[in-house]
Length: 263
Figure 1 (cartoon, rainbow, N blue to C red):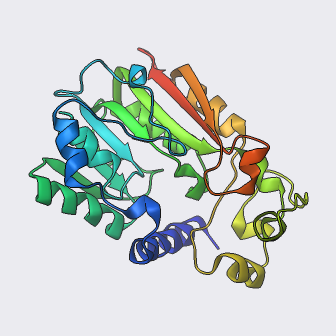
Figure 2 (cartoon, rainbow, N blue to C red):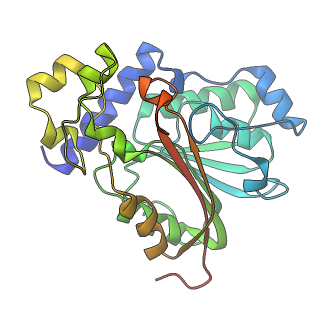
């Protein structure tokens, strides 16, 4: 499977996740929007814990925000209700439709753009003050183009918030871990659904779900630094839906600043 096929597969897969009611496809309600308009808002980057407000600028009013691979009618509408000028970029038309649905329902100004997170050429350089990228690069084959794209579209001093999976989770046999509660080491890293699982086994375990990639910490953090970012904050959280939460963090998050001179 080539990398373009992965994009098409994951687009169809996430459209099906919307149809199936995946928790990350359920739009926020009117009460959450009302609270955000009154200044009482929060969004999640990893797990279910809100991102510390100290990670954000003191005010979002007039800030240009890119919700990167962040469709689903959740973070984008909240940030728009808090005063930001929000663009939601996602690979799934159905996920973007969730954001448009909330915007229409609540009278929010919010733009949606369809595309692959490795290609941000739809946006001019220096278009945004903040990029918000919740746990979604697990569905992306390669990360350096993502971080370079973020550096290009951010203004100097702009903020990148990124959440990602702990790559160590991918060494374990998924069937043994989730269905029998056993930690069976099976895969060498970096892991890819495309190369590490026979197609029939993958279909048995995950159906037609999105393809996943582990990514090294070098890709997650080192490639951010190489793209011209300075990391200012770091956080971790348990995986909200895995037995592994008892033993090791499932998610990591970084907050980074785009340097004045990026490579």
